[in-house]
Length: 115
Length: 410
Ligand code: FES
Ligand SMILES: [Fe+2]
Image 1: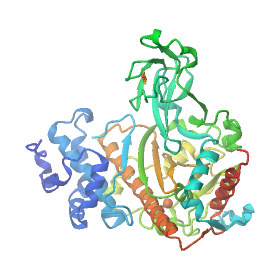
Image 2: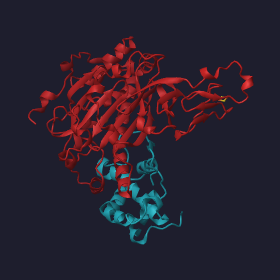
Image 3: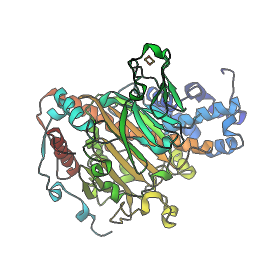
Image 4: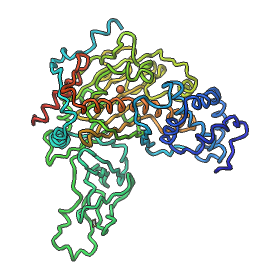
């Protein structure tokens, strides 16, 4: 998996692959958000949020059930923004005020295997 | 809408004078034991949806942590849905080990006693050594089960004191036909936290905290100018259950590129679908028992089912919250986010993951505050909590809680 590369036109996300690229569940992304600085979350958001449509226009051309390795990596990185955007657009900080740290929450999609 | 304030239900409108509530209810192990015996072993408890077991042979396993119960809910060949304790008649093993599945038999992994999907015992290996065991009398131990609106309720009493319909006391009638089944797909969010379960029950029974605790998450979307403390409107009582109407800001339009992109893919559970409203296909929006005032900026009807459930029908689905006591100072929260369908595209998966993260963050705010509340109450400096006129449902819950602990009929 280490040698999988992002599709070349999305190389701008390369700096964020280490943080988000290997996370497999929403809870792992939530945990990651808690451990990143707000500055790092903002940098990720600034790079990706304005280009979401471009990313998904590209991903639309693949079968969601059979993403090739590079596109699967791209989607995993992009899913990181579901957490990072909460910190950047809503909370103004990585962690929820007063919540336990580290905090994990079990999240199960019943009958669907999320990426 | 003219003056909304006349619809803000106050405690005095409901003749609820109990403004001071002992902290002991929230901190004492003795009260927890009484809650187990006098409430959770007597009330009908919601544990799932019929559409979780749509076909004969489908089963799910559910925990009821308050009673340490491990329950199998299974649809038989005859189409009937039944509930059993997950405990082998031989030596007690919790024999159903998968959280869900489809089968016609359950085989105990210890010595292979075999049960049918209806719970009856069908075979004992080496049966000659169990001449004293009457197979007909040794099925899995049944639990009373009934349904309303597609929701499965259990009753752990030997014989329930009242039927489910009597227990729901008219709530079921008012909400008859509410289209829960239009939203079959769910994401379950569960967490355990160090606080009394009633802290969370109370948090979901008042809007007073929303502008403060949820200042960044919920307030911009839901707290309207004409109701800054988010009083629930038109509160209705049904025995120990209640409903209340909650507004929303229809002009909420955050300057937030990721969220804006999500809205364009698939509206979050709570965001009003203006086109659907106009076309009369907005799910719960048109049900006569919901938003009886017909307020234009309707957000949700918050439905509280005693003892531990809050349901919020929303524009594009509904939220289901359940609060299980584990001890006087530990509880489990289960949140289910129901939508019309599973993600069909990667865009929808992203949008639903984003809504999941946003919903979870709000609930985590409530749980975080409930934990601080527990620390404060256990510190011992205060003997009472004080409930305002704007917290009528907290007083109502307490009134009924006290009555049941004292043995009042369900
Ligand atoms: S405990 Fe189940 S077969 Fe022995
Ligand atoms: Fe809240």
